[in-house]
Length: 222
Picture (cartoon, rainbow, N blue to C red):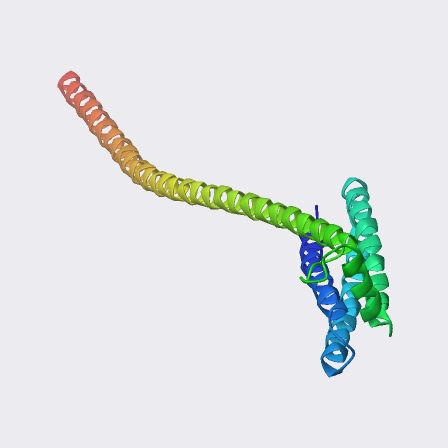
């Protein structure tokens, strides 16, 4: 799955959880400046959630078919969750929100302590579960990233060692080439000496033969 999508997903889950809590808090406030400020905060958070939903949608549609199907399925859940949050925000921001909240609390026998409604509790639990799942996926992605990084470092070290080995071998080959060049020069010099010696020996032999011929001719003539 795309790390970008998982990042948007984590941001949305945290934001959804925060908005759910704020809606509950706002439902317990009476109309006044404090509640107005709280509603402004919630509205700003809703807008931010819309932006994250759009970003997840764009990212999901750019993925490969297998990952795309999974991301779009999750996106449908988040859109449904955001619609529920918007309905809750609309209910909380309505003029009779406080009265209806008190009536619900009284009917449930919980008028003496602040508690969330069943719908809010369920949505909060779902948001927390998705947040935990998102955290688990991010931790797994980080673990894989660290493992990949370790493998990459190992590969780089192996390549470095191989490079040193090749450089050492190249140095040895260069030394061998130098030795071969020196050997060629020595053999060439020896070959030249042998050729010169052959000429000298040949010249001596020819001179001896000529001398013998002259001696023989001189004796025969006398």
